[in-house]
Image 1 (tube, protein in one colour):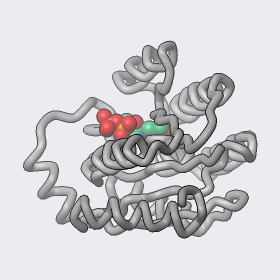
Image 2 (image 1 turned 30 degrees about the vertical axis):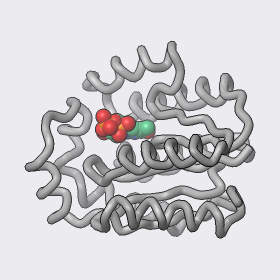
Image 3 (image 1 turned 180 degrees about the horizontal axis):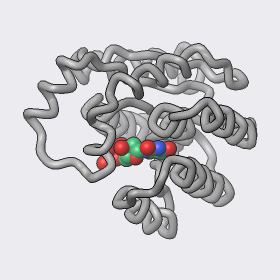
Length: 199
Ligand code: TYD
């Protein structure tokens, strides 16, 4: 099993790339499992709805996200490549407010079994101009996305910090999200080959 994860702000093109990768794996007959957070299985998708519509305080959110995450991992029984649409980095990027919360999140990340630490994380980094252009073009977002829209810089900075924090053997790959979707897809495939996750 190889784990990879996708991270990025709303409108970064994360979902488009995950869809392209799914197509690629199926065409190449590469065994894979795609999951997303919060949610990822039948029961947790119900919790996803509740969390994303909630006004929970920060500490509760951290714990809800990690509870949902550990529950997902305990039921994950996969071969091949497991693809996470958001993983623990999202909690660090979005929920981190105080230094005590930050420590808590880092400690919770340490509780993730090393077989689930992604080998590669693709982070789509976007500038504010691209964000605003895409935001104006596209329709409604969920309540959660709206809540964090004004916190783009803080969240981007947190992702930047994550690129410097060593977590096991994980390689954090920052991708320029303003490029075309074809180029980004190519970059992802090249990295999967380079790090020998696929041939
Ligand atoms: P996402 O799956 O990207 O949904 P959508 O594509 O509808 O935006 O993310 C849902 C929201 O949840 C997003 O605003 C980020 C937030 N989130 C956190 O704040 N912390 C977390 O740990 C996770 C996994 C998500």
